[in-house]
Image (spheres, each protein chain N blue to C red):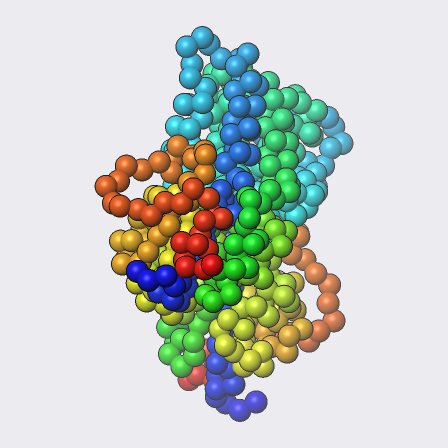
Amino acid sequence: MGQRRYEQFDVIGFDADDTLWQSEDGFRSNELRFVELISPYTAMGIDIRAALTATERKNLGTFGYGVKSFAISMVEAAITISAGAVPVEVISQLVNMTRDQLEAPVHLLPFVPEVLEQVGSATKLVLITKGDLVHQTHKIQTSGLAHHFDHLEIVLEKDVETYAGLLHRFGVAPDRFLMVGNSVRSDILPVMALGGHGVHVPYHMLWELEHVDHNELIVELASLAELPAWLGYD
Amino acid sequence: MGQRRYEQFDVIGFDADDTLWQSEDGFRSNELRFVELISPYTAMGIDIRAALTATERKNLGTFGYGVKSFAISMVEAAITISAGAVPVEVISQLVNMTRDQLEAPVHLLPFVPEVLEQVGSATKLVLITKGDLVHQTHKIQTSGLAHHFDHLEIVLEKDVETYAGLLHRFGVAPDRFLMVGNSVRSDILPVMALGGHGVHVPYHMLWELEHVDHNELIVELASLAELPAWLGYD
């Protein structure tokens, strides 16, 4: 690899949630609030968080990713865990928490606009995210970052098949494609499986359903601010 | 217009819900079930259906279209309309109705595969739908129709701006584009506003929030089965 590593790539893809802006924080704080709200109605010895995560996992295939899916899992888990003892006032609060989460302003991570400005000067950028269509679209539109990207893709699942379809649509060969994101499972491994490249930028919290064990050697940067230097920009 | 009208179009777009397969039926039957479930807990003189529709309308901007959005509106409306008297067992049933709706098999409308086969022989076809990402993707994948379409687009809102972006992406001039669908508001008027063409194929039920008054002269076919003849196929 030479100094101008960016010349190796025709397209750079960015994940959005917890790569460009905060996301998991919103889920975690609603999860903590859920535990507080439900605890008074559950028997001793119930692991409320684990039960909620298990409900999310069970519902993932049918309900998909995102805040509305999380909301329906919260409602379902609240009733199940409390054996029907949770009052409807608490269910109302869960709905209101969901609305607040969907309407919360986007909180950009540090240096994101500067990095996109620099990295986008020589290379085409695309945004690839999964989650809720309305929520992700609102975040992209209100972030002020949309103009940096040639394509904004909200997909159902970030797997090998999805990336293969996207790269075909972008007209880029896998070995000329770099994906940048906080999830090894969703952003890095499927791209590497296609012969593409990945840069892992961990966020300090990761949703349990995104955890993955792996043996691959993966490039890891401490922050997105390090990306321009890694790509060979001064 | 000559006999081979299909030569006037480079791309034909199809709506999906209630154009290729049943959709509104599922919402209506869950709506009726909602009224049955909630009635015992509401005061005389409450119009339950109207209150549910008003809740959906209020939530549309934040929650978007689709089954999960409808589910959250049902939960919210149930608690509001009953002034908190609805038992959580009923809330549970609303969640289960939602799961059933999301997992229900696709019910194709008559002649859809034959029409797509014939119409797609000379013209590129695309599918443009709004709604829930996971639900729409599952319906497209399990319908067996995906191979007819060059692009499958699930969008947040079918407005002039969205169509302009899609036509640009497809590389088609508006006057060479035809959109076919059951909603004048979402499938026909925004395309005509761009200088494109529309064919309205009404379904016998239409969601209240899709109703629109208009003065435009719009081509209307009684069934999708009439589309090949209208396009000039024998």
